[in-house]
Image 1 (cartoon, rainbow, N blue to C red):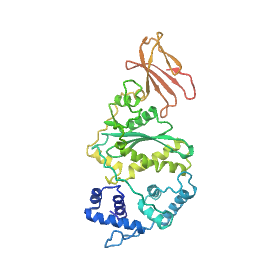
Image 2: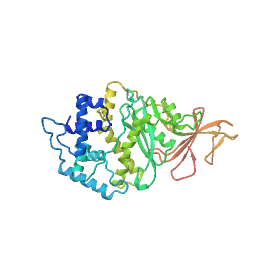
Image 3: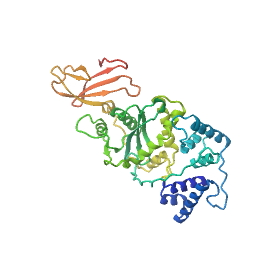
Length: 400
């Protein structure tokens, strides 16, 4: 372990982002030695020194950043302090370190960049009290539990509109397996993210959500989210009421992305969700590939891969004959009239030779992926009686 990484780890212990036990194990030192290093870290905070803090027999190498890196950082900080509209003087050194890694293919500690900014008089630090981090429980296998939630936020500042980020993470590896910025927090958008996730990775054992009305189970077909999970043999699990900390891992990912996506959207003049989702995909890929967790000392992809290699994977393939369009549609109950017709959204639909005075499940399929038209299906006792489509931009329905 190099001295910059050790310095960062001691700082995490000092600010209570990492426990004493994890710090001792990672550094390979005793508690007494770690306490001494923490005291020296606080002394350094007061003196704003960045060298010789470890009292090693050998002096650590110079932490001076290459000129091209310094030029890049000055350019980014100049934008942040002089031109940014929504994030002026809101420094995020973790993001600056990430941008340097992406630009120069070399890792730089966020603390190294912070120290450089202090020395160059580009940043004046403030010390704040930080609450003790919670100890979180991990399941033992990939696919045993997916945490799923949404976060309304000003994700694209140019729109001056609150959009929603829907996010799904694997509880064991902390890998982000589903992420999409959408204009509204609706059942349909959640179903789209779940479908993309299970088509990419397979079916987990359970989905873990809060008590939002979208996720609450019900006895009717309007409980769209839980109905789809049950159809896929996935167990829906809810947090206890009044316990938001129970899904702390996904909340932490929202915080991580809120510190990046809005700023990058402003920085690169993003004005719509299509372009914003491209930035989101880049940030998710970087997090899964490159973000080393302080406790596991692994990236999400490394932890995922190791669990799969050790046989700790509970993901299941989708059955070949599964009709995903029907599962991931919006289901509504309608009563048939004497002539075998029903009314949906002010339009009358006929089912020739269909049942009379019965109930059908009307399944709405909004546009998804490359499918630009809207489709409507009528199900009776699990069988599709008839289908209609409405081409994009039109209001009339045509039978298939």
